[in-house]
Length: 408
Image 1 (cartoon, helix red, strand yellow):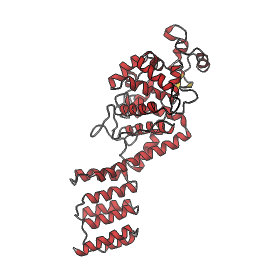
Image 2 (cartoon, rainbow, N blue to C red):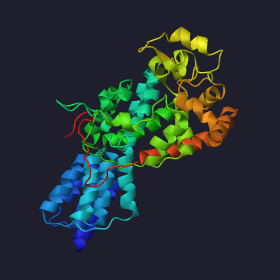
Image 3 (cartoon, rainbow, N blue to C red):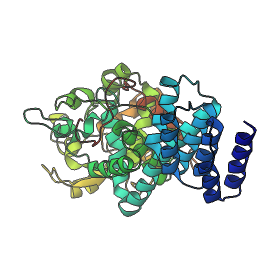
């Protein structure tokens, strides 16, 4: 046993000195190896960037009948993390408890969190690249997460393609103007290459929504992950679950927000997200040409703004896009609230926030912010987390799709 202890110390010494080949040679020359021997070399693999070798060694160790301990798994998780083996690392983290009956310590949880955080890094890097080239996608991608969560919960059902005889949410009228599905597919492909079967499409939508806000100078928030993907997507569901732009704010609050656990503050805060993106003329043309079926413009619209909108949006125009927050539609800030306060919101659902004392007060408070919008940024982050937790699928529910447009 003394020789084993000496050999183990030798492996550890070589590993710490960066002499991996010498550590491997010392290990191979050992006539007898215990759990410390195997763990020492697995640790050496991780330190020197040989993640795949660490996995191979662990499998050999188990085949040789040596039972791993908590230190073995800590070294293995660390090796997987340093080498980008996210899927393998999470597989070992799970088997540590379920197969070997080892209770994880704080260090194990930290390693697991580090593994999952690498998935967030992949999403962030990909979105940084995409938004730098196509900044106008920020608004649609934020809206896609909203459209997903308000329709039967945050389960990525909005991403599923139709199947023969079963049209999906993508074909529903409120979703026909959504853009960015290819972006989500691209992010998913990157994640599947790096860590297959780990990050759900529902989590990708939540992470992408957060990242586009950050990349357009908005607030950062921690995104709770662990959602699983749904397997059902029905064309009719968005119509009965998404607040229409032509309803007034109170009606939308009572019919679409409150039943889902969101309140008046969440409503006025989340609608501030309209600072990003554009809208089709058809979403507000009645306010220009036929308000209340009276062949006139909505009297709450700024009379100086109506001619500018009519110049862009002719009667029956269904294709032209108009900036929701003119001059600032690619920057996340409070300027959209200033448009609402001036009677320049495009949607009835936004302009009628001025009719309720609470939401009116919030709009005016944000409209008058001159510097950093601390209140709005903090509130938006909190409401996004709240919305992102609606009716999520976890555990044995749902699945983790290999491709976001198709069920497995």
